[in-house]
Amino acid sequence: MTLDERGTATAAGTPGTSAAATNPAHDPRLTNADLAPLRTRTWRTYNYVAFWMSDVHSVGGYVTAGSLFALGLAAWQVFVALIVGIGLVYLLCNLVARPSQESGTPYPVVCRASFGVLGANVPAIIRGLIAVAWYGIQTYLASQSVVVVLLKLWPSLGAMAAPDSGIAGLSGLGWIAFLAMWALQAAVFWRGMEAIRRFIDFCGPAVYVVMFALAGYLLYRSNWDVDLNLSATSVTGWAAVPVMLGAVALVVSYFSGPMLNYGDFARYAVSFSAVRRGNLIGLPVNFLVFALLVVVTSAATLPVYGELITDPVETVAHLDSTTAVVLGALTFMIATIGINIVANFVSPAFDFSNVAPTRISWRTGGMIAAVASVLITPWNLYSSPEVIHYTLDTLGAFIGPLYGVLIADYYLVSKRRIDVDALYTLSPDGRYHYRRGYNPVAIAVTVVGATAAMLLVLLGSADAAAYSWFVGAVLAFVLHAVLSRSRARAAA
Image (cartoon, rainbow, N blue to C red; front, side, top):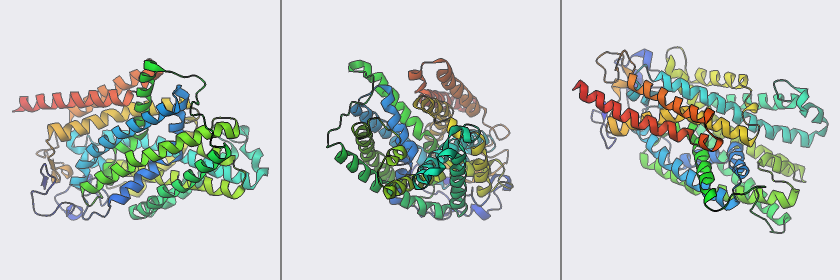
């Protein structure tokens, strides 16, 4: 089956349906029930709006947005950077969603068209390992909500919250909360994609209730007198431009993970229009409201509590009402769990399953990621604004080249044509067999792009490192397009 430029099936069948799950022509070493093209599609516009609401409204999204104040920008400059950055994310997500939505296949399978049917394991493993890091980080951030609730209800647990009460840099109470969140997320994931969809449909909107209430309460307590100039040091005039551009780059890096494997979710859409509408409402529109709430809420903490607080859980902890603290913290916890499951559990589940479909199921792949997320001690990766930026820059350095190769191959090299059946064959005559199942061009380009981006992170200034995703993506995009076309001309 081949998809033409309009995404319609040129062989028997209709878009979004496939007999691949039982097709004997598909090599069992390349497929299982989770990796095969979907038979039916059920996700509509609201499901994608809720997906992005959960992602944007997580504690990680709030903390990342709040950390931009440390760059010396005024509140309005932070706001502008957030909106420009999310606008780019919207456009980039639409680009990466189309091949999976049209073919009905997840991200690692789509990568077989550019990397080769076996070479796709390279981007799958890289993305899977990155998801492990993010899964651990988001689990840790969600667990901090649990700590807040426990201390509010039982202040006597304060001794267990002391840093020296635990191991590996996390307190004893922190370990209890972290493992509790770990187990809860695993339970939701184990129930399957439909249960996950229903969970995130609730999570994102629920946070808005708390966010609006929190912002209104703080504005009332501050007598509506809020100074939006929050940074101890400030940059003005033309000097602010490069700092704002760096903030824009940081926003893109934050979303680069779910953006890269967005095809894992776009494949479930009833139409590409549903994806595009969901992205529009869930990203620029939703993020506009969220950015306003983050700016106002963060600014209001200064006159109310005498310090700038950019962590929503910590802000909630300052409330006088125990009930309000518990409800607020639990809401942020639930929202963070929602995006963690969809962005950082589902992705490695597909990615690791792609490595050995006959031995690693979707559920097994997800549990591999969950166990690994504990071993990396994620609380040490998100401990301060400086560490946050370094973590995002490093992850972006590896994600950017993978994105660049996929987009260049689909839109420029293949002209938006995917031979779906060829994605599941190890025949040397297969369209995506390349050289023993690997496309040397795509792999070499990825190495070059990632190396260049990491050199920027390690050797460049902090401002330059923020562009690691862009450097890797653009370099890989250009090199893959040029080298692939040159190779095609030579072969002809």
